[in-house]
Structure formats: structure tokens, C-alpha cells
Image (cartoon, rainbow, N blue to C red):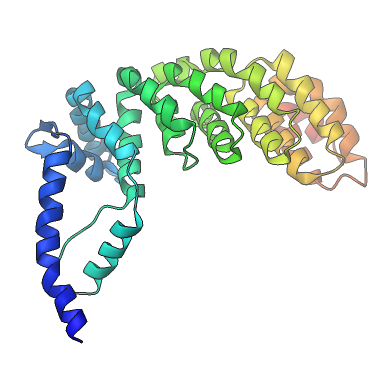
Amino acid sequence: MKHRKRTFLALPCLLLLGGLAWQVLRPREPVYQGKTLTQWLRQGIGSTNAEDEKLIVKAVTIIGTNALPVLLQKIQATDSPLKLKFISLIERQSFVEIKFTKAWESKSEATEGFCILGPSAKPAVPKLTELLQYDDSGYVAMSLAGIGIDGVPPLVQALTNSNLGVKYRALDALKGMGLVRFIDNWPPDRLAIIPEVAKIAVPPLLECLESKDQFTRARAAKTLGALGCEPDLVVPALINQLKEANYNPRVAVPALQALAMLGPRAKAAVPVLLQALNDPAFLAHSEVTNALKKIDPAAAARIK
């Protein structure tokens, strides 16, 4: 009991020291209309109000490159064992009410900031490239994708990373850069870079289709489909993926989904898809039918 009292009595001192250290070490936050960058970013996360979102984008855009030191600090946030223990102690007492920011929250704020700034955040690419080599959380990869075409080379480089987590997150980020073409009213400048992204990313993505790791192959297939470019190269590779899948749904289904995303540009795959429908050993018949509807509606309509 005495030990618990001493612990709780020490908390105000620890809070004071921690607060002073935080104030000294953190970068100065830029301010717009009386709110700090962090306040704007936190207001934006999870917001569904269109007008509110416009104001947040305006604020971060006006702050501009002055936001980069703060964003780079946030993207590197960690939860040390000491910090987690301290949070646990705070949550078990009622003397002081304080909200701690977890590492994932800071990383989310950073990613949102980089995505809003887009190409303006290019000066942060070298540091993000360095961080990407060891970061399998996905936040660094998403930040690079949000910056745009300047973030693509490090993402492509990460496709050869020996850490599968890093490789998967890079594949997911590249896929996200293509999937925006399916979103209504997406900014035209972000859509316009997809062919440029594909020009850089398609060759290494095709190499990923040859990986011994089936999850790498699956993610690479879906990324190629999302980008929707270079069909003369991509469609034959996806057809081979189907043929070599040996009816493994973890490989075959992503290839079918990728062909569906390519739509009419994947028409060369129709004969193979029809053959798969007639093969009783091929279990993903519904995915084949869905792909045919996207690629060749007339052929799909003739299926009995």
C-alpha cells in the first residue's frame, strides 16, 4: 500500500519532468488560424464532413514544407516499454487526467500530412527512403505513395527487401496508387501520374510474380491490376499465373481479380477463363465469372 502511495505521489513530478523534456525536444509546430499542425491533422483523421476536410487540406497546404520536420518526427514515433508502463500507471490513477498519443496515432497523422502535401513533400523522400528499409508498419510506404511519383522509386526498391513485411507494405502502397482510379472525383493530378507509376513499377512487379512466396505473387498480381497499365505485358503474365497456380486459390484468385480490374484490356485472357470454367478441378468459378463480366460482358452472358 505504501509503495502504491509513493508511486502515485511521484507521478506529478514525473509528469512535470516529462512535459519539460517534451517541450524542449520537440520541433516547433507551425500554426494556422490559431491551431497547430497537429491539431489540424487530428481534426482530419476520421472526419466525414466534406467542408471540414477542405479546411484541413487548406491549412496543411498553406503550412507547406514547414510541416516536414514535425511530420518526420511523427512518422518515427515509437512506444517504448517505459512509455507503455508510464501510460499504464497514469490510467490506473485518478489524480491527473492526461491523454497520451500512441505511436500509431502519430504515424497516422504524419501519413495524412504527407498525403495532403503530395509532391510538395519531396524534400522528405530521402529520410522516408531510409526509414522504409526497416518499417513494416505500412505508414512510411503509404506516406511515400501519398507524395506521388517521387515516392515510387524507393517503393520499387523495397520490392527486393529481404523483410517480407517491408515488401508487402510497398506492394500495398503501389496498389493504392492505382486503386484511386476507381474513386469518384479523385484529383486529376493524382490520376494523371498512374501511367508514370506503372512505367517504373511494372517491370519489378512482373518479377515479383515469379517469387517463391505466394503472398508476394498475390500482392504483385493485384497491384498490376490496380495500376491497369501495360496490358500487353501484364495480361500474359497474369494468364501464366493462373496456369501455374495449380488451382491454389491464394494465387489464382488475386490473378483473376487483377484481370477483372484491367477490364476490356484483358480480353486476351477470355479463352483461358472459359477453359477454367469447364475444368471441375478449378474451384474459383465465381471469381472467373466476375472477371468475365468485367472483361467481356458478351462472353459472360453466353455462359450457361
